[in-house]
Amino acid sequence: MRQNMSETLRLALQFAQANARNLNQEFVGTEHVMLGLLDCEASESVDVLKAQSLDRRTLRSQLQSSLPRGEAPPVVVGELPLSPKSQRIINNAIVQAGSLREPSVSTRMILLALLDENGTVLREILQRAGADPDELRRLLIEKPANAEA
Image 1 (cartoon, helix red, strand yellow):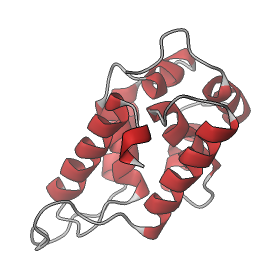
Image 2 (cartoon, rainbow, N blue to C red):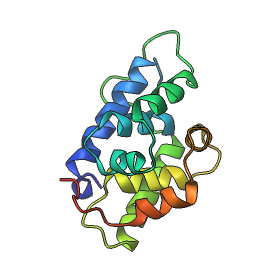
Image 3 (spheres, rainbow, N blue to C red):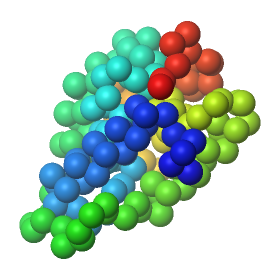
């Protein structure tokens, strides 16, 4: 799967790892994946959020405040494992990218998969911030003028 990811998505997933470690977590959850997307200022996903007048710093702050902090750093050396939900998000993004005939899986496809996942804190935070889920989904499905590398 890694060879089918945009470089920006690779970077976002590295940021997700760092966010999970900074919170002393033993795995990378969906919230960490979203934090990683928000850390990539020049990305398709952030462009779509901006089109909805959503501020990535505000979203990041609200998301971080909803996450627990572990007492000790993770014992895992190397990459932290993905939670089952995070793995499902990535798998769903791969399927979405294929169905939309995208050349690679981008941050936009990951955000679309996150938005489609029920029972996440992210949906609540986006709605509280004033996002219209239907419009956000429509924008995520559209091919951007400037695709990620």
